[in-house]
Amino acid sequence: MNTPWKVIIIAVVTLTMVSVVFLWTRFQKFGIVQKIAGDRKWLRRLLGLIPMVVLGIFMAVSLVNTAIVMAHMSIYWALAELVAWIIRKIRGRKKTDTVKTEETEETEAAGEAVKSSGATRKSGRRFRPYIVGIIVLSFELCYFSYAWVMANNVWEKDYQLTTEKDLGGEKLRIAQIADSHIGTTFDGEGFEKHLQTIQAQNPDILFITGDFVDDDTTMEDMLRSCLALARFQCKYGVYYVYGNHDQGYFRHKNFDGEQLKEALEAAGVVVMEDTVELIDNRFYVVGRKDRRMEGRVDVEKITALLDPSKYTIILDHQPNDYDAEAATGADLVLSGHSHGGQMLEMNLIGQLIGSNDQTYGIETRDKTTFIVTSGISDWTLKFKTGCRSEYVIIDVTGK
Picture 1 (cartoon, rainbow, N blue to C red):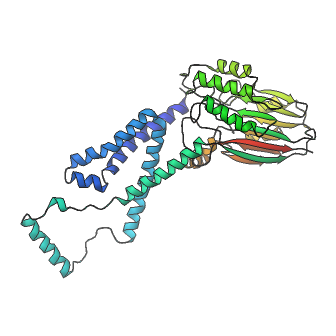
Picture 2: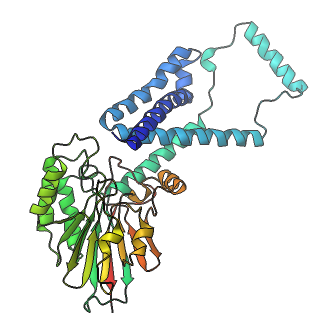
Picture 3: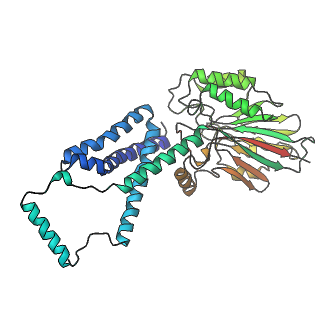
């Protein structure tokens, strides 16, 4: 296992453990828990474990997704309590020593008399509703319901491009998918249905820009998806480049990278590894190895002998080499990998640390247009908030 994955796993485990303890203490604060437990701390702590057991069951089914939910819940809960504390302080609700009025003193004296006589009844003890907890849980329910819909449904994203180069007098319609991670939000059958939707848009060519499968993809789903690609009808065929997950990180799937390549090629898919194809003497397709693959060739070497008068499209899974790709004079670069930032918070963090040249959408540098898709699915996570799952349709009009 490489160093980045070790760091990610350690961070996730640590955050999950902290979240478990934090959430357990928060669940104990709900009014119904305190009313049932009364002054019995042991019972309050025990009742606080009930929702944690439920989360534990979900974690056994989907560790990563449950960990993400718990981490979000903990962070937002802590922020909500901080805001509530600030509001109470501003409104003067914080407990302070104040001068007591005669009425207050009389009331307290009467209360002390009742206590001394043993007349106080524990059953009459009142508990305020835990407003912060109710708000946070309601927000999280809406938030992750929305996130599930955005990840598990697929939308079409359209781009209209123009070029001064000659495309043979015809508009070029490109379909692009990336990050299908077969088995996360759909299986092989689901992938076939999405292809049928794309087929209805009548693209001239289909580009798959990496992470077609991952470690959790079964061989059955992989083969069924390849069979669906074999049935896909378009003028210039299907072209594919590897992503960082296609050959696997943990090596526990029941097929390897070579079997994937064989299945794709048997389906008529052109597997590109730092190679170039001239399509119908109209445009070039440059397919790059993923940046984590050994022996990846610099893009300027791959494109050095290309005819600059022809439209050039570069397929590169990770959007991490923009300066070099723009320097080649390529017209269009298509990528995936970032999942559009996946979750809003991850997107912001990714932008702060500069993990990619672009997270999502369209950008132009010099004469090169870069497009990053959010992907048609996700790796492991079944939630998206900063974006939504999509396939891309690009219409390029030449002179």
